[in-house]
Length: 241
Image (cartoon, one colour):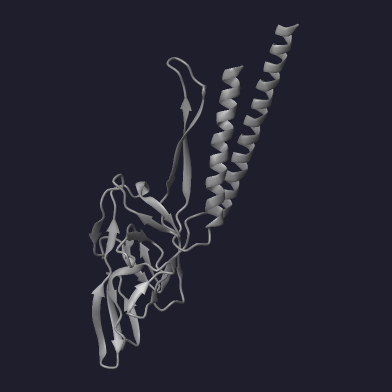
């Protein structure tokens, strides 16, 4: 009975974590570049036995491509394929994102709402407009004409799911994810889509269905805890009688 109580209790804890992850995904379903996470679990078992309980293996981000949509920002870009935009803040801290909502700062750099700046690109003050080709080449138009001022390079990782989630659709490299490999977008790899943004890869319908399934599993485990507790109570009463 203690084993049944433990198995049901660990099942409740697992489903609670699962619900928390799904709820966070739904809360960020409209955030540009957001990547949903999934919780993973394993069965606890002694040698030659099964069904001792459930252990949490944590959660990891799923880097599936989100839908690309047209954007209104003058410097909005999206990645079509794998890879990340490389960002740096004022202190030199580096981060990576797939959210390409950039605006021009006073010094001409392209920055995110969080103050991170796109690595290696600076728009001149006399630029009337700017554009980005699929291969990452950044061109500006001035009164003197059009010229190329730089190129957007993308960072790729051997194990992106092992990156550290910083929030706001930004990530940080870890020893487990491996160091970034910088590559130019082009015909044989990912492309840069100017005037577009990548939506969250969270499906609201699928997440709601997963939440319902997790709630039912939680309720089933809760009933298991109640049943095991009642059996323990009856056994204790019999011993006293």
